[in-house]
Image (cartoon, rainbow, N blue to C red; front, side):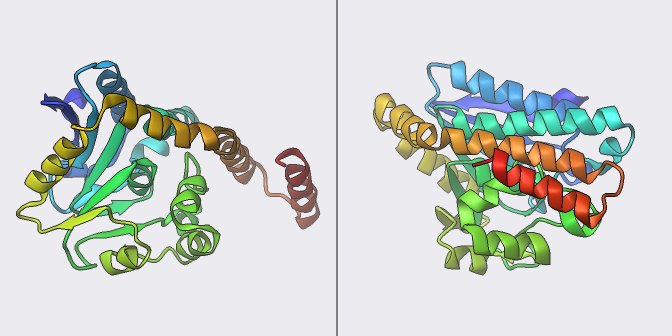
Length: 261
């Protein structure tokens, strides 16, 4: 049942949300997205919880992204996937409590977005063939929305975002270290223990310091982030409409530059 695909528990002042669909490489279907959103809200309103860990239940994959089989079933499913994918990432970004992702395996597409949207990231010390991030959307004729443009831009800057989106290359731990992206790196054997210990340490901070520091940073960027999510949705819709001529695309892009200033 879907409820088993997203697990939730509270340990002390830390909530742990676990992606648990190993037979499908932890790919998200619509019900899983809804459940993930529900569990994030559940953790947010729990006054006992100060910090949230998002992790996977198996080592090979953190998440392979969206369940493409479900997306391709009907246009309505694709619309719902986009709607709930955006809700999950916006909630991770804007909720007041600190979110740590524990990454012990491969992340693709939406799986990468969840990691990028989180506040801090803790990685297992693994070689590239066992742990990497990848955005393959363009090579699969998929427009990278629900944060596919925005989140790498916030995390890596413009130049590297173009690199990873257009090349669709795998980004291993060494590249991420060069970008100062991992918050911590631990051995596979100690990853669970060390991640929880790190979360426990942060949970000792005054509640006001955690909530107001994160909220202040996000409020400073709220207008930009909301505008970028809206732009991604608009670009995604136009991508899948009838084929446009070069002139039509030129006119559309000029209009976008005018409206998104």
